[in-house]
Amino acid sequence: MTLLPEVQKHYGKLKFYINGGWLDSKSDLIYESVNPATGEVIAEFPSATDAEIEAAIQSAQAALSSWREVPLRDKARYLFDLRGKFEEHFDRLCRVLVQDHGRTIGEARGTIRRCIENIESACSALMLLTRGDFVTDLAKGLDQALYWEPRGVFLIITPNNIPMHAWSSFVPYAIASGCPVVVSPSKNDPVCLDAIFRVTDEIGGFPPGLLNLVYGGSDVNQKILSHPLVKGVGFIGSTNVGKQLFELAGKLGKEASINGNGKNHVVIMPDCNVDAVVDGLLRGCYGMSGQRCLGTDNLLFAGNALDAAKEKFIAASAAMKMGYGLDEATQLGPMVSERGKNKVLEFIEKGINEGAKLTLDGRQASVAGGEKGFFIAPTILEDVNPAMHVAREEAFGPVANLIRIRDLDEALDWINNKDAYGHSACIYTRDGYIARKFKMEADVGNIGINVPVPQPFAFFPLGSKNESALGVAKSRIDSLRLFLNQKTVTERWA
Image (cartoon, rainbow, N blue to C red; front, side, top):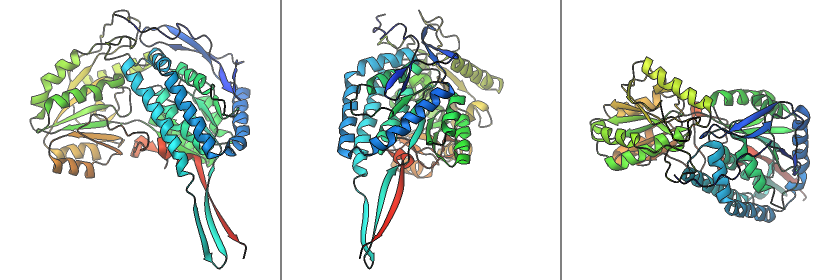
């Protein structure tokens, strides 16, 4: 086994990034960041004090007027500079993501490429702001115009499963909109955000305070959101935490884009291409070790489709190579944390206790050199019914439920009536009528046809619904609605 080199063995005590510089914290509350593949501590990081929170918010507020006055073409140049810096540091960012989060190197490369696409999309979003709306002579001598203005300072909270991608789903668009941000990452992978801020620190055109980084947790996040100068929050994480933030934002009259859990389904019709299905399900169920909101774990096989695909899928699942993601041959990395691993183990145990059949058991995963890592191998459950916890709640791990159904109508009943989330659903079929019926009738925000993960590109929003998303504005290009306020100006000079 040949591993790519770690960027650093240990990153020391992480600093805050406030007002354009790195700041040592005075906090006595210190956390540890752990490499999930080895169980080794790779960094320590502080929880922000009230004074440090205040400093971050005040520096962001101070940057609001200066950044707002920067011409759009110059904002675009700085964003293009940022894109170039991500390309320049591409390899380092990938290896940090593997080390701090646990992804495979291939998954990390895909993630940083998605980050770059979001920066590019934010550049194009600037062009949307040049259009304006202006109408003359609505009445005699009366003109009217619509202006788009930045709302102000925003809190951006990144989750433990997609720390870098979540940053790119909000922050470049906030920059384009003219809104300074205070970023608060998950306590599981803060080194990822430290790495990104070391890249943004190289952009000469960003005013001090435009981008700020603090660490902490729910207490820190609630203090930031409650501050009078903070206008709203962009959040990706669990639905339960998202609801708390959404409720707080609502009470305070603030904006919120909340992106939460999902319980996603893949429907496999009897006319499918079995090899394509098996390949897709491996990626959909086990990509990022199942730790993504668009990952799939309810596999609905219509008619005799399960008979055709079952043995191939089980064999391919059992053959997946687990290990440290810095090994190019690794197909499946660890869970991001010990707590995350234990939650998946509890999820599997609940399924067994409810009567599900354990067809493939990945709970006793063994990885050479990763004895202290947080590994779970692919796990497959059968005989799952809609009343079970494992059928209704997100696994957030490498767990697949093989479920027999009669036909497409039963699949739609599962998706529309037995799923509280409404995040995504996919179908494998060669029948255009079936595909169109599914596309039109599945009540979810993201649809996939003959793809395992319906991941929108950066210039499309992530169209979640129901319990998966709260707030009008989504992430990515749609976050312009979060960051921008409309002002109508009516003038008469005649």
